[in-house]
Amino acid sequence: MSVSSRLNEIRGQLPAGVTLVAVSKTHPADRVAEAYAAGQRIFGESRPQELKAKAEALPRDIEWHMIGHLQTNKVRMLMPYVACIQSVDSERLLACIDSEAARLDRTVDVLLEIHVAREESKSGWEPGELERYVASGNWRMLHHLRFRGVMGIASHTDDEAVVRRDFEALAAWRERLAPLFGPQFDTLSMGMSHDWPLAVACGATVVRVGSSIFGERDYSK
Image (cartoon, rainbow, N blue to C red; front, side, top):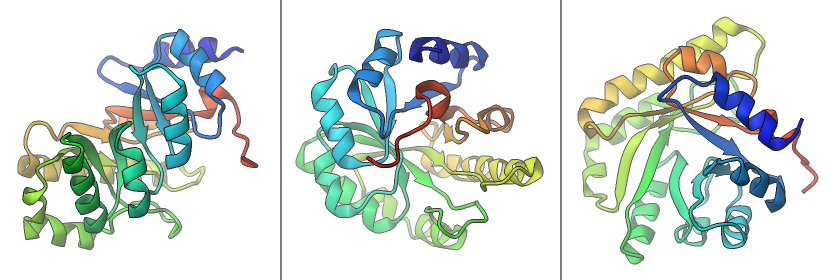
């Protein structure tokens, strides 16, 4: 199947109100262009250098989302191009994003990535760490960020009960934090190619789908 056929198949299954982020990481710009030609405008990347290169090569109305672990020394590279950083996992990173956004006199959307998976290798705020940060109120001083919601990755397992538990935990965090951050805190980004239908059933408003659209990734790149 072509990229456009796969993309339209996914779109046809998504309920109204759920946004599709086409995860284009490791796929070449011409594959992204195929999806763009089929009407897709939101794409997710995990590597700052790759996002920058594609943003400079592809149409300017693409909305780029950073979805991979982000180091503070790569934030400046992203800032002219990225619309949303979904993978914010520390107070230090938040402060750096705010500083770089201020330097360019712009506001950037961010999601708080929360660690709910069983794998220790997954990134994200630990619940206790996030609770302490939110309680500190330091986030109120970040005037060039727009806190939009939470993001997370479920455990890598075939046990649907475990995956559902992870998704429900993320949904509970969004509900818990929304009263603090206000009505703009409306985003719940969870679910990928193998588990997005369950994520949607658990309340996802954004799904991040890559291989089901572009095919398997080339991890040698």
